[in-house]
Length: 455
Picture (cartoon, one colour):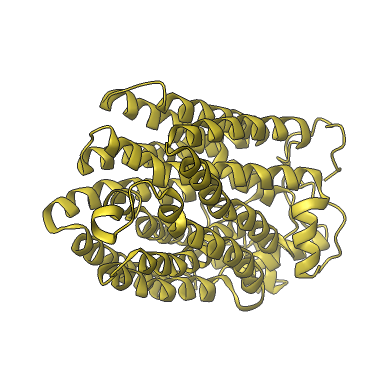
C-alpha cells in the first residue's frame, strides 16, 4: 500500500476509512514517493525531445539533403510533430479519464521505440518527418500524463510548485540532452549518437513507468467527491461555470478554446510560446551555425536556454503560488520576446549565451503558470480534458509556428524577419492575457476584467 494511503484521518485513528475516497489524500509531502517518480518520468520524456534540439537542424543539409535555403522543408519535421502532439494532448486527457493516467503514459513510451531507428536509417528528410510523428505521440501521451498526475496528487495551492518542478525536470533534461548529443555527435557521428542516446533513455523511461509509477486517477475522483460533498479543506477553487458535471469532449473543447474568456486567453498564450520555441528549436541553431559556431558551441547556447528554463521553474512556479498566475505569465511573454529580439541585436558567444538565459527565464515565468492557471479553474471531473485542450492549442503552436516562420524565412531568404515576427507576437500575446484573463489562484480574489467570464 503506498504511503499516501496510510495517512487518512480514519487510518491514523486505527479505523477503516469511512469512504474509499478517504484513502486518497492530496499534497506533495504525503505523496512524495510518487511525486518523485513522476518527475523522473518527465525527465526521460524531456531527454527524448531534447536530443533533436541541437543536432538535426544543423546536419539537415549535409546528412539528409535539405537545401540550405529551404526553410519550409526544414520546418516540416516540426510541423508533423506539432500537429500530432497537439491532437494527442487532447486525446490523452480525455482517454486518461476513462482508462487511467498510467496506461496512457505507457502507451506514450511504446510509441517512442521507432524514433531512433527511423533517424538512424533515414535515407532522406521525410524519414525524420515520420520519426517526429512518433515523437508527437510520445510527447502528447507521456508528458501530458506527468503533468496531469502531479495535479491529481497535489493541493490546489501547491500547483504552481508542482508544475514548476514538473517542467523543471522536463526542460532541464531538454537542455542537458542538447549538450550531451552535441558532444556525442562529435565523437560518434550524429546518427550513431542519437541512436544510442535514445535507446537508453526510452528503455529507462518505459521500465520505470511500468515498475514504479502508480495510477493517480483515484486522487482526482476523491477530490471531486470532496467538492460534491462539501468536505474540501483549504482555499476553495473558483471553477469555471458553464459546463455540466460530466461534459462531452466537444463541450469541453469549445468551452476552453473559445467560450470562456480566461481559458481562451491562456490558450492563445500557449500558442505564442510554442511559436517562439519553434524558432529556438530550428532557426536559432541554424542561425548560430551560419554565424560560425561549432556544433558543440551551439549545443551550449541551446543547452543554456533549456537549463535556465528548467531550473528557473523551481522558483517561478512557487512564485505564482504567492503572487498569482497572471503577473508571471504576462512578464514571461514579454521577457521572452525581448530575448528573441536581442538575438538579432548582439553578436558573439557570450552575448548569445546571455540572450539564451533571458529567453529561458521568460519561458520559466510563463510556462508552468499557464498550466497551473488552467488547472486552477478546471473541475476535477473534466480537468484532464481541460488541460488536454490547452495543451492541444499550445503544441499545435509548433505546427503553426513552423509553417509561419518557414514561410517568412523562405520568402525573404533570411531568418531575421522570423525573429522579429516572433518578438512582436509575444508582445501582443502578453497584452491579451493582461487585458482579457482573470487571476485564477484560489487564494487571490480576481480583479474584474472587462468582458471576462466569471470563473
